[in-house]
Length: 138
Ligand SMILES: [Zn+2]
Image (tube, rainbow, N blue to C red; front, side, top):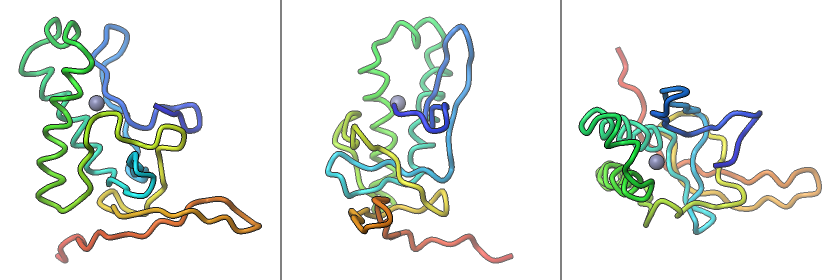
């Protein structure tokens, strides 16, 4: 996926060189329709699904499984959570805006839509948040 400031925004890696997960809590993923935005939290769940799969089947099985199989597994987790929360459900792994996949959001649970903003001053897209969840008060 596209890098921001030289870093991958969203990725899980159980390779030999490094093991870990990169995630930016303020980057939502724009779907292939160009307007639906999945929350950073949902994307985190996707990456965690890779970790769960790795822990269940082990290094060799994980590394030698196909990327398509790994993503199908992660999308299954993602879709279940998206359904529970009413967020956009990706149709398949590549269902994201290929040339400009990320939009900045305020909170990790923000999701919604984006629309173009072709003003003279900026082409930055306008995000409309549909997240109604707020942290419980203590
Ligand atoms: Zn994945």
